Amino acid sequence: MSDEKFTRQRLLDVQTLTPSLFTLRTTRDQGFRFRAGQFARLGVAKADGSVVWRAYSMVSSPHDEFLDFFSIVVPGGEFTSELARLKAGDELLIDRQAFGYLTLDRFADGRDLWMLATGTGVAPFVSILQDFEAWERFERIFLVYSARHGQELAYRELIAGLEQREYLAEFAGKLRFIPCVSREDYPNALRGRITSLIENGALEAAAGTPLTPEHSRVMICGNPEMIDDTRKLLKGRDMQLSLSRRPGQVAVETYW
Ligand code: FAD
Image (cartoon, rainbow, N blue to C red):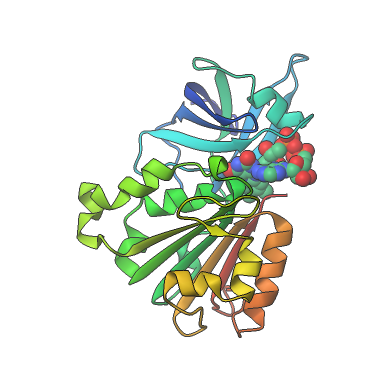
């Protein structure tokens, strides 16, 4: 085995969702292990031979044979300008080791699991939902996924099909998907940003369940401003970041 810190994988598929969002599937090294919710560093070789690395959450589940990722295209972005050029058959470097603490290990208990995502921040939650553990441990699961426009909401079919998967069928009825769209009215979606929808009570009304320190465990991922503002709102309701020395109700992953 090579002693490099990464492996060389192949792109199997690239799908464009919008001009600035795409999904990709790669081969997976047999030795690559991760917990649902974690991320790996991806590397792309530039024309001058140097390699650019960025953190990406796995979208696929730990038991899939392939790896799925969901990416933004940042105009002029050093990494995403390169990544967006790749096609099926091209090479992608992937760290041997997965990292990150946005996993269910962060919570010792809880009745309701809330997953709040903006944009590509939905990635770790799609991985968690394709794994067994969340469904087994929690009575109810709320996936709250916000985007500016409805068309930017990825993985809708996958999410809608989760409860029909054989290994999750016994948990059918636990998941409530709550899409939120901030810049247009969109069918079956709440209108607004996650923070406003918490402040005005619309999110809890849609869930039919209040956010409480006793029952709710909240994971938040994506845009740093949304994460800070949501953390403040939750703090006002006695919900704290969960740390190993002080178990709490909130876990976050900031993307930039
Ligand atoms: P950069 O120079 O890295 O970023 C330039 C600017 O683009 C940032 O300052 C920010 O304003 C904006 N930006 C960066 N990332 C995003 C984003 N995801 N959505 C909206 N705006 C953004 N990105 C993904 O697309 N998918 C992921 O699954 C993902 N997982 C991540 C996990 C972790 C733990 C971290 C820290 C970051 C993750 N990111 C993810 C962000 C990713 O690492 C890069 O920032 C992104 O690929 C842009 O790289 P860049 O070099 O093109 O631009």
